[in-house]
Image 1 (tube, one colour):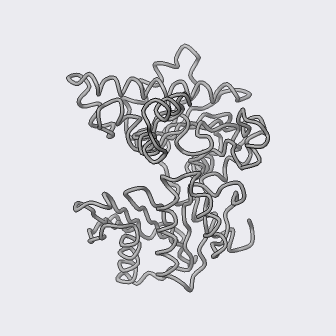
Image 2 (image 1 turned 180 degrees about the vertical axis):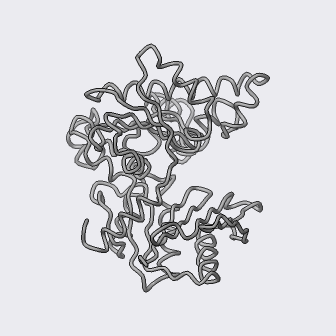
Amino acid sequence: MTAAVLALNPGSSSLKATVRTDEVVVNAHVQRLGTDRAELWFTDSAGTSEKAPPGRTLTDAVQAVAAELRRRGIDVAAVAHRVVHGGPTLLEPTVITDDVVATLESVTPMAPLHTPGNLESIAAARATWPQLSHVACFDTTFHNTMPDEGKRLPLPDDLVALGIRRYGFHGLSVQNVVDRIPDLGNAVVAHLGSGCSVTAVSQGRSLHNTMSFSPTGGMISATRSGDLDPEVALFLVEQHGWKVPDLRILLDKRCGLAGVSGGTTDMRDLLAQRTENAAADLAVRVFTRSAAQAIASAAAVLPGWDTLVFTGGIGEHSPQVREAICDRLRHLGLPRLLVSTADEEAVMDDMARKVLAGQL
């Protein structure tokens, strides 16, 4: 039997973990970390689910996953880690060493919402399984193929030399779409979830991603602003005395759906409330408009447009949102429409095995 690889995919308040051999052995999903309602669910290949206490932190969650794997007698041979941003030097999957961790720490300001959790998960896993190889799998890797005009931001060379460019994100999710749909053709992939981005794909390669220097850019997300006139931030600094930490909380935690709706981030709740709640209705309309604009802009860089794929939590599970987005695009001539279940952990598993086999 193929050796078992554990894929760890941390979020700001969650952790997804998958162990695969020749097939998925067990899935774990920790939700609502940091709250008294945190819970850890395990589902095995037979579809049997069990609940276990996860603790409150990512470290607790990793340790809870390890304890459950031991209880089930599952021996892990390697660990794959989703890392959102590796900066300008960590662009390909790589074995995690102390030097790699130091590099990730140094580029934390490029993805301050995600990297601390990535580092916490890595530290907890390396302490739990010190004898194993650990592989970092970057969300930016898939977008390495973007052309130079796609990577370049309209900035002078001295700032570009600091590593400021478009990196693109959700690459693991888009790679999974490419792997699962071999006849994708020239496609736009809309990953719509708590974080949202749109990617132009041609011949299995990324030509454009709406996220830019960090995951805060692009279309709006659940709590992130997406693209915003830079003068908004300068206005708040100069006229109202805002500091960088305040701005970061605003742009990453208080904007997007949360900002427009007055605090609601779950699309299911917004859809249920929109007939009686003007703010919820506006949030849905702002979201679908932003997504449609992002899809149209991505299609503009393709040599043709064969397929539109929806993935991510909202993209997969909200036909109302998909229909509203498509309604805004029909006059452009919509291509084939597909929905793909996101499985970033499958891509991480494949990357880790190839790295450890010397094939990457």
